[in-house]
Each structure stands twice: as structure tokens, then as C-alpha cells.
Image (cartoon, rainbow, N blue to C red):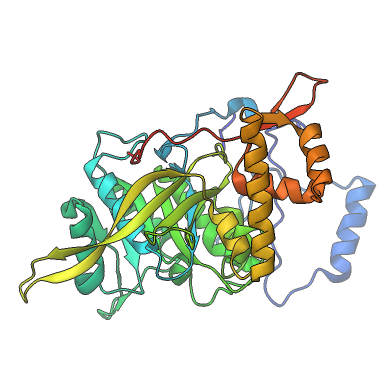
Length: 412
């Protein structure tokens, strides 16, 4: 926001308002007249224009540039809707494959917000939730899931757009941002869910190109100005690689504009069929957060047509598994998977034999004798989520095993 100045600074000072030049009327060009005027200007022939010049009603509105000193901008800390994971007043992306409970997570999250039970800035203060969904029926899917999650349904709002002709349309970004911001403020909304985010983008915007920013940046401003957290689900494409965010369907702008991202994946090594939620981006906080393991369990609810069954997400606690590792291992052949498992087992056992930690130089030396390269060991460190410490400015690095989880702690 630009702060007005009480006195007009001289040209060249911060805060000086630069002279705005209106665009020429349609169909007109400056031609030689413009060149002659520039020549007279250089010769010292003054123009009557000033920075406060007012154009006639027929002319094109003038764009004016302003500079604001950083010293005049108040600073503020980062607040968290979900402590450390989902920032307040920013976009958080939630990518994952189909059928692993991403939408059930949104129902769980909405329930915590409406009850004021989520560990974050609004803990103890129930807030509203605006839920924009295009892939599921409210009557048959979304509302029952919210029931099953225990949400305060009076605080959850379905958002739709009605035209002058009475037609009902889904939310469209960025077109509906201004009106949506007003409704968010009026209803004391703490969370906007977009399920999925890509479906809320205007169909005229190419979601596979950088122009996607024209829809996402106004959404980011809405979040910042209202203080509402925006959580948008996304799907994974068929790409491979170790970068989780490169797998998000659509333009890289989805993950670039988002300030945080939590990803979902099913753990193929889990005997109970559980899934994993991991922090894969966090521009406003720490990325070194423990992953959480969760199950999707069935819930039976009564309806006017008899009992029906829906899913509900239940967190089991922290886990050393990580979505990045799960995705990088998926699709590898058996030989590669066996090699990874063999290396991970060797490194874990070696550190355990050394009391839980060892100097990196020693690890590399012992690993080399076992036929493992430095790069292989570094990738194994990442998969095992090992910690690392440096002994002073000139000391060497030490790797250590992560602490064991203290029971099954359910996130608040």
C-alpha cells in the first residue's frame, strides 16, 4: 500500500511521483509531431505539464508510478493457520495422486478450523470455511464428509456465482476475487478450500503457461489482505524425478506462487495401507518438519434414505517416511529397489553401531570400502531423513539418526 507524502520530494528522491504520459488515442500515432516536440523539449521549450496534470474526460486514464520508502512499511511476523505447515494469509498447495484421501484431508482441516481445535493462530477461536469444489457432489459427498469429520456445518459455506439471468456458475479466478474477499471478511472466514485449485481458474487462462500467474497472484493478494489461508488441491502428472513439485499438473506457477506445500502419497511398505503427508515447500518457515501418517477409515451416517457410508481421515502420528522418497522409489525396477534398501540398511546399521552418529568423512570412507559412492550415500541420508551437525566454523560434519517418535502423537 502506498503511503501519501505530506510534501512533494524533488525529482530523484524516493517518493517522487513521476510524470505520467497518457497513451495516444486509438488510431493515432505520434509520427513526426512527437519527434518535433521532443526536439523542442531538448532545446528548452517548456511544456505546461506538471506531475499533477489532470487529463480531460475523453482521454485515457493516466497510470502513475509511486515509490514508498521501506522505512514507512510496517513489518509483521508470520502467523500460522496450522502451526509451521499452513501459513495464514497465503496459498498452500496440496498435491497428490487420486484416491489417497486429499479431499478427506480438506474435510478434516475444515472441521478443525470451524471448531477452533487446530494448533495455530486461531486455536480456541472457531472460524468460517469457504469450500469451493467442482469434482464432487455436495449432497452425496462433500457435506457427508464434513459430517463425518465433525465440522460445525453452520460455519462451512458452499460458494457459487449467480448471473443476472439466474444461472449458477462455479467460482472463477481472478474474476471473482474482489467479491470473494468481501464475503470472506463479512463471514469471518479463516480458510478457503479450492478442490481442486485448477478448476477455479478461468477457462480462458492457459494453466500450462506462465500466464497462470494472472489468476493466482490476485488470489495471493486476496489471502494477504483478508488474512485467510488458501488451501488448493492439485494432482500429480506422470513425470518422474526427485522434485515433488515438478510433478504437479499444469504450469510451474502453481507451486511458485504458493508459499507452502504439503504432499500426499500412499506408503507401499505400510502393512495397514496408510498414507503419508509431508511438507515439501515452506517459504515462510522450516521445511524440516516430521511427516504424518494417516488412515482413511469408513464411517456410517444416517440419512433420510437410510444409512450411508463415507470416509474419514484419521492421523496416526509422526513417521520417518517421506512423500519425496516414496515417489522417487515408485516405478523403480526390483534391482534398483533392492540396491536402495541394501544401502539404507547398511547406513542405518552403521550409525546405530557408532552410537547413533558418525563423522561424514568416516561414513564416506567406510561406504567407499563397501562399494558406495558419496552421491549414493547423500541420497540415502535424504531418504532416511538423517540429521546433520557441524562442529564449529572449521570442524567437520556429523550425520546422526533421527530421534524415535514418542508414541503416536495426533496433530492438534
